[in-house]
Image (tube, rainbow, N blue to C red):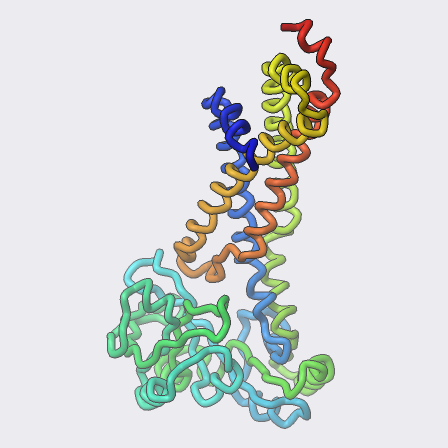
Length: 379
């Protein structure tokens, strides 16, 4: 560390070049952080999906309904612990850009199937006592400044009319990445008021006694309703979430491709910068060797400059991406899981360090092999 001031002095000799190289690392690592956040947003639903839950949808498509009477039949299947159902609403709050998930839920069983959503008993009872009651996620309430008792008008797009709801409960999550952007209201009120598809629901969510029974229970459910007017398709919650993510293409391949091109370009830019820096200081390096500094010292001296540039630029870039992700979901609910995890920060710094080593290894080796007599002859 006693030679650290010397490394800094060399870097600040060409301030503009050093600043541009650091900026290149900052932009690359910011892009890395952005890609990780987007990848996580598309796949977080898969990782957060319950291993002990099944989703039962219409065999034709998820947008096709199922009879509400199926619930009691599904409950009789061995291995089923609880069953609830949900229905997509698709309304608009104030403006069309104010998108968020709205579900008509089965209030008697929702908490049994989704224990990770935390709601106080007092608030939940207030919701059950109000036919126009609603439960909103903490992030959604914060986004619009809603509080308990507020009257929220939702304009229906699939189900016409203006639907007014009273905020009776605000839920939080027991895990860091739980979706806190949903809006729930009572299915009985919804089914009573709508004019189409009465007595039908969107899909069922089945809570299992054990994740090991997922395959057998799924087959039993689909077999029970085979050849009926409403045949079913049952998948684990994780499989359904993965299928939804795949509809957007191979996000992982896209991220790896873009990241590979960016870091290869960064490697070339940094390597060229260090090679120029070494050529400009041939005489100085020769003097260092002449006064007794070893070849190994010169090697690590040049590598230290390259790694320092990489770590400073990488730290800035990954720090900016972390601050950006802390601002929350910029898609207004389309990608609710918007977070740069600590593991990605460590990986980003590690990648920056590796690029710094790779970019500096050739110029550093060249400097190490430099003969004092040949170097002084060029001066």
